[in-house]
Image 1 (cartoon, rainbow, N blue to C red):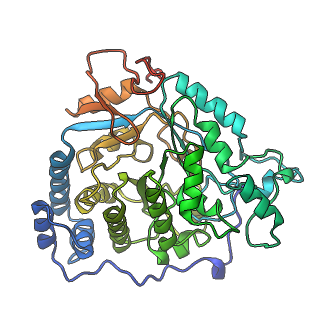
Image 2 (tube, rainbow, N blue to C red):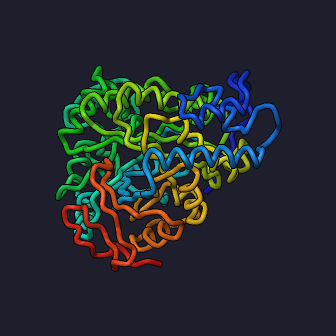
Image 3 (spheres, rainbow, N blue to C red):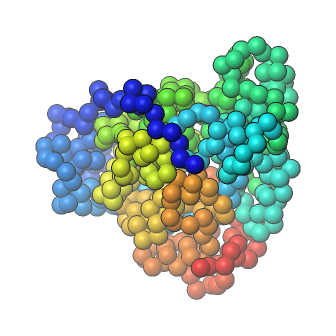
Amino acid sequence: MSKPVPDSDQIPQQDFERLPETDQAFENALAKARAGERLTVADGIELLTTGTDREGIDRERKEQVLEAADRRRAEVVGEEVTFVANLNNNVTTACNTGCLFCNFKDRSEQFRTSYQEDHDGFTKRPAESREIVRDAVERGVYEVTSVSGLHPAFALDAEHREILEASEREDLNYRSPEEYDTDPGTYCEQIEAMSVDGVHVHSMTPEEAYHARRGTDWSYEEVFGRLKDAGLDSVPGTAAEILVDEVRDVICPGKIGTDEWLEAMEAAADVGLDTTATIMYGHVENEAHRVLHLDRIRELQDRTDNITEFVPLSFVHQNTPLAEYGMVDSGASTDEDELLIAVSRLYLDNIDHIQSSWVKYGDAQGLKMLNCGADDFMGTILSEEITKRAGGDYGEFRSFQEYVDMVSSIGRIPVERSTDYRQRRRIDPDDRPHGPELGPKADGTPLVESS
């Protein structure tokens, strides 16, 4: 069932103060990039637009930016292309945040026992998560990524639930698990359930951490400390979207702001958890917003030095409220995708690894991104609901054989890696069959048959 289109006065306006205008010249910005100098926001805007002195993308200038980024990639990480054996286990789609770019969520009211109509959402109990992850580990997977909707019954742990149950505040987005057909448990129970047999648990975005401390005076350090004790190993830097509040006010006004996102990420680092960082681009924002986002990620890494990779996520617009409300009619162009990867490599001089998402770009374009500055090619992701529900077309899993064949086809070196990149295994394309070997129960057996 389609979502109701809001009245015109309910749609956030896109009258932005930050515009892609600079007093820098493209040629100067490119020279700095080639020399390896730290770029300014103005430099980044010039490179991302291929020059604010002219309209549209200049193809010759674009190729110069891509060439500089590919050369930087070779200097920083060499010819290896990495990937990981991982599983996505998203616990619930129940969410009331109302982000206009998202079609993963389902209104949480639909999950209540009193709701009689059918819906396509899901919630998993901790025992179900444990079974899913245990099966994946037996097959050789060694990372589980879990990013979920903000289910009103979710609490951090038993103490947090007691606080929420006793509170009379109506702004906490909390309901007792007894009101739902399926009890998601607590965040700590889900993390503990997924932390089986040595698997690496990559979960709890800043937005989820905010949900896990609502109604308390707990710091993010307290929240992430308890999650770490439950088995959390690293934190995905998603829910970042664009780290500029004038954009967030349009696409996700119900989410935490830029400063709080950064605060949560620093707290995760403070308790000893690695993190990643993302950008979700190609919707209502402009090039200035994209570079400001990169600048904030670079400053965060200067302070924490624990971001293992940067992940550009090209907006998939189909089936999302932004498209249904007429606020966008497409996502980013291929030129924009390539330039975002390239400028990320050149701007983020303190983050070694830039990821190319075959889920977002497809196989052929995903490979092209590996010649635009990227060096990581995601993972096997045995399930991927988020992009699929938004209208993505590029599949839900990847075999090691496909990885080896694709990476070898562009003359690069296929490398299996751990989540934190500290373990690596170069793969000989001729030594078949190909399967993971870095996991606690991985013995080289293929995870899935290649298509």
